[in-house]
Image (cartoon, rainbow, N blue to C red):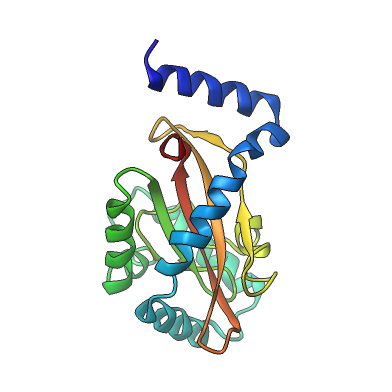
Length: 191
């Protein structure tokens, strides 16, 4: 049996056993957050992009956010993507793609969120625009500086890899939280 098949079988057993067993990867994922992920999200251009979007989105109510999210979802996979395009283009999105590619398979996706949980920049198109209703944003941005959220390991159907999402709060130079980032991590590369 190849290592990849044995590994996949082991992860499947861990995933089937529930959250407690899936957290077997948590120490390695936390170390990854502390050693690499936090350094990537400290980039000054990324901080500036979050600040700019925070100013633009100041005062948005939940109704407006939900409408923006609906527009994003309707555009996913379409030919006209005016809501998605600004998140997928520009220097910060390029930097996130370079970080994803530089991980040589470790990172499956990277996206950055603002102070209301809307995407600022992404390496890959996400299924939705608003992450503010999810633990990846609530347990990082809302938890404050230094917060890390690690999801359970799940099979990503699109890539056929077992991955966890590692999310961190992002702070400005003063240490105040301004946003959050999520990194999809292929746990096979943690071994």
